[in-house]
Image 1: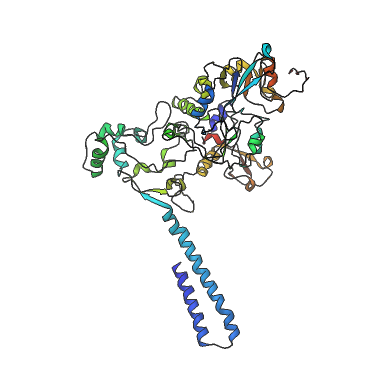
Image 2: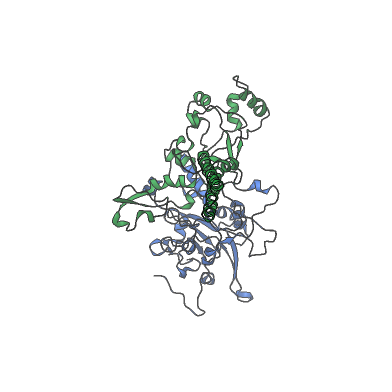
Length: 271
Length: 259
């Protein structure tokens, strides 16, 4: 580990979601739930109780027929970096159950450490965190289909998207077997990325200029990772949470919907 | 503790004798009497709680289980060429095979080779029926733990016995002790009920992982850089190397070992 810290350049794994390609089919949600042993309830319409690490929201431009337009927006955990790893949720956790990993840029959630105070849920501006009101119950025999690489959560703890961190761990194992410390781009991909039939989700290292995510958004890593691509935006950019999930859209109203603006406010261009 | 009890009893009987033989003056004797009993009961209670806490409770806490087959590591280590990795090998994807499956055993044990009754039992009950042996894994960690053997053994160059002890030198499978509450092996907490350890392989708790991780990540820094006493630093992420140099730990992220 010591050597890895010295020689290996820190990664910053991020995601780019092209909203013009997203059809809102929900494959990513399904893939995410089965990959990460996310429990489901009999009545999934109860949104206070249901858990969705990745959730698709529907946006409309609110206009009448000829101009009406909709957009689906998948929302995983944004893995906010904040200012030097001070993500909103990490800063408030009294149990250190969640921390910011500077080597991968992923915000962890340690279920056995969490005692369920839910400060992080209050702090998260993206509603990416969910509380287990109940112990997970799977239909008979289904527990045999659970992934052994992700630990199931118990009642009373908070959980959230981990960017399929266990896949990173497994990819690292494979790289070690081949005597490497660096991962190739395709070795670590999240379940949602691979499940998207439209190819709307791209995943990779935002610090690596050879990776597709970097080429798509051209993040300005010196200025809080602000995207240089004019079509790219992040949710609630102005809060300064410095998220690592970027969205692409050629539609102005979609980009504007990503943040809160005063009604007649003219969007300021980034310099 | 038994000597303590005896002494206490002797003392108390003496006190009782005194009360009986020399009765007056009344008030004085009445003062001494209850105190003797209080001390006596305190000592008895104290001794009893020590016996229960250190002796009986740990016995009750762990159930004793026998491995399905008594396994002789010494014989096997002599027979194979590559040491531990001959049977406990890494797969191509970097995952660790752990306890060998029947497939590997069958390579040699298709038929009974020796005269050991354990081997006969193994071949008849498991090999012939094609049934996996339900080995009890001493070092099985909870669900939430991610441990990469390859990162430690191949990249970290750590020997197997650093964590597992000299298990390769065992001729018999020892008793598997299972915590009745948690279902975890006693090897995780360690033999010593007080949680003390002498060797690196005595315990397998998170603190034991953290100890080594902290040591390898420790960056010695001078006193000026750390203007508070070292005892203020959260344990176990600190290890003073000397009084002049204090170490500040660049700690590993939680997700390194959790999943």
